[in-house]
Length: 249
Image (cartoon, rainbow, N blue to C red):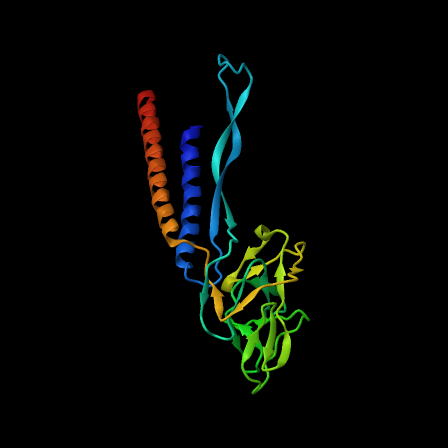
């Protein structure tokens, strides 16, 4: 087996995954609360290369053949906060996620505090899912109750009436969260949320994505160059193998 050929083919596959990640980052760079998708590369052992009996390593020894592999991840650094002047918008300063309940009763988590009022006066996300309070219930706004105010600790007032406190949760290991639609994250069953005791919220602001579009464009150029280099290697190896076959034939 020509190891160089397979290594280059494996590199092309890893580069395609990186390109997909970068493309998604660029597309979602203007989405509030979006977390950058990342790719890291590692070497995967796939079989062994038998050493030459006359080599310095010695007869019968072997070397592992390494193939590049792309590992996906998420960057959870905080994005830039932008003013919106909408009273139902809120941005978390520091760690934590808003706790959201979907129609099927499942709990998901998001950094996007772009909230709305449903016709039944329930506080919901822009996708229509219910925003949860620390009591474990959705938050209901009062009919004709006046303007809504978010305190820094997440307590919601309508006029002088306290409606509840937003549920702000954190996790011991954010890398285990699974990204799903609408900017949400779900947690595996064995990763339990923990309440943020002293959250810091800003009303009338939204957290933008943590993507730097210019950096992503530079990565696209690097990906293109690396892809072309590996294509040339594959072409060169293929030509050499054809010459050998022609000579033997």
